Image (tube, rainbow, N blue to C red; front, side, top):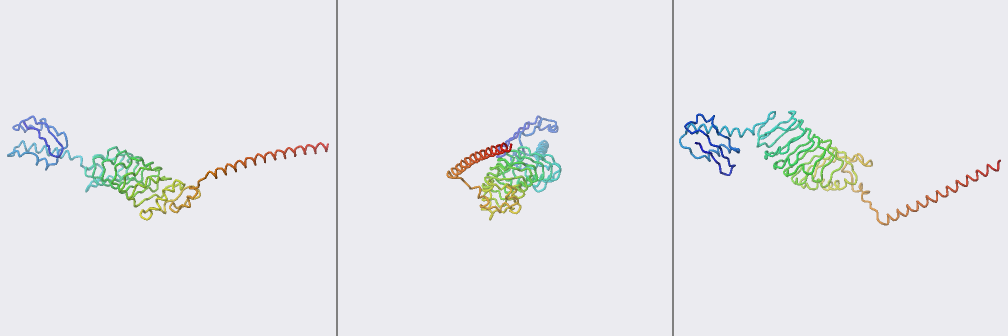
Length: 341
């Protein structure tokens, strides 16, 4: 009987079930009970290096070798290029194919994946788990509204992420969880983007380029940006910014970084309040927010209370005098009518 082979090296342990035929009757092995290994087989070179020298070639052993090679080729089937995609030099291009879902079974060594210009509405959880070499992910111009939590948990080398021209309405705190290698994030042209969580970019210390332009943002928390020490380029133009008191901390932070952080200052304009509508966002100074720092002391409150009390007394006295005057006029008019009669 052909005994099972067990690899106990640093690779995965894998045991194959025995063949029911003897070596003298191996011409019928294709109809026998040869079973697949319980895990992925190691590479061809490693396999032969670990197998003992079988002695002189035997036809049965040659047949077993062919079956083993076939099994290895089958295990590599997951690295084939998906339908409607082109694959070359670790670049998988599935753009402009009218896809409604992401393609399954990408090559394991994919470094650049383009799914741009499709109709993808969702990315399944764990989709990037097996593609640990991924460095560029292009999802622009789709119909995405959100990304599943933990999508980038295993994509440690992901550096460039393009999510522009989609339908995101908010950026949650866990959207880029564990994606610490990100250098460039493009969230531009998401017209429904209204909110960015204060901790949305937490931990992205290598982030250099952030594009939030042409969305629906009216405000942005300073906390969302101050944890990005490597930020070089920030695009925020084309949003309906409300330049109220809540925007002052962000603008002050941006002015202090403007020397080493390029921003689209000419495109960023205020949409409100009315007194600053149309004004460039970066033209606002501390004087523009002077009213935000006005505070009332106890004396101010006492003075206001006193003025209010005086005004109330004056109002009551005025009404009293008007009532007396009206009553006198009425009596005088009635007396004049009686004299004429």
